[in-house]
Image (cartoon, rainbow over all chains, first blue to last red; front, side):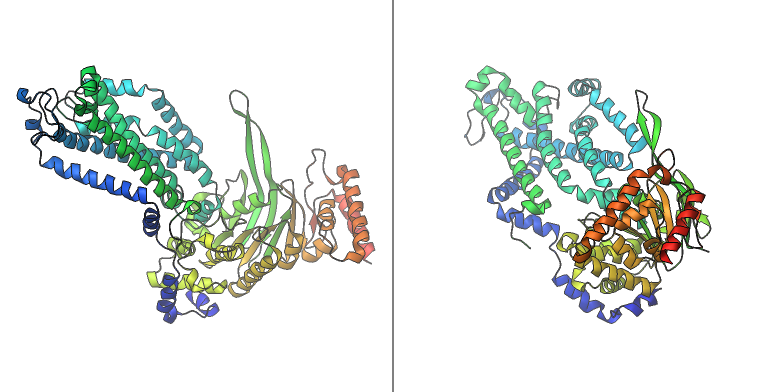
Length: 316
Length: 324
């Protein structure tokens, strides 16, 4: 059979190296290159990227050098210590604990939970939506009834109940508890796009080419909805920082001995703190605003990179 | 023995209505059609939009769930998925799609697109595979620098040729061409069709050529089946269909071919209107009480038409007299 092709084409094995080199020269740039040129074209997004990466690395590494239980000990002598002093850069809270150190450890906890939650819930939601949308029929019906049931549960209340009945929980268990409830939005979004995508001819062409269902789902359809996935992931990451923060603020997130951005913002519950001791809550609040803004900037760049018609970076 | 034998193929889609969502009726997209495709020939399947020709093509390639009937290939009924798997059926039967842009995955490079069937059906080494892809590109007249590009960087005609290259990759015996050129302009149509003909000569491939363009079908096909409302209304050779059409639907289709000769515009228009008049007035003669086509009756060895026996004979003799 190979001879059949040899016969009707002038190209033989001898030309292979030369031709593939020629093709290489004409190749379209890779996705990574496109994303990078897109960042270069957008200065604020570049700054945002450096802020995010630098900050995450800083808190992850910095938290390793801080002895958390010792930091969280009450020190009555430093009761609401003023900020910008050599010992307390950002002052101290009502327990005399350093706000700066709490901010570092707290950011590590909150961002860690947000990253973990985003990875787990988005992965699950994407798989659920892709499979449900691709197979359609009874499988879709069953999977969507499970989805409907999960949507029906009052999310915040369920989380609070679960947090209360689990005796010892930390950031890891909390991440898993959140993940049970946060995949649904992603899955519906992905399913609706998959339904449209699975009807297209290239899926039919892959099936007649003998490609298996799973390979079609994850290697053919998923790359085609990657822009949606990227945008959804960045947005839900920004949102997930808020999830933990919100619950901790209400007092149902991390235990009070574990600092997090939420527990720090909950200092603002006290009118005294709001007016006089602003340093106990303002740094955490500013950090969340800056982080979420920076993430949405980066998300926009990724979206533009995924959609050729929106690109601002140098063409090819 | 024929390459593919289609026997009484039916594809019905259920219509669900009411509170319980019960099946109350069905859309009969394909309603009992029978024909054979011989090795090395081009079989034309012609009909208006919604006549079920694409559904037939998709059933043959295994993309559509068949309600009843059988499609025999190498003596096996390939409407069953396990038989398709056993035979590596899609290695031998491939498809060219109408919309060249949506049939190529926009996120994959041309090399990966053309190599997809090769990777699934033939385990080639990396170099052999790349060589085969380059040869395929050469056969459809594209340069090697297409290898690492994406589908949107090509024109419609080039994309359709990439689609042809993918279909030919495993050296199949039959290619279903579902309106392969109807999305292209005329000059590019000819280009793609000539590549398809060239490939047929060189590789001995059969085509099931689905089209509504009778001019293209005349250029490509030896045997033609006319489809209307899910059924076949006329089967015959190119000569039977174009020179001795019997069914009114075939006559209508032929009358609809645009005439480029300006001098005969009036005559052409008159004949078209005459055919249309017959169609409007004699519907009941050509279709049964439910408005569906009759079963086929054989007129000659190659020619069959969906009419009541008596009427078919009468029309055939009339036709013969006119010819004589």
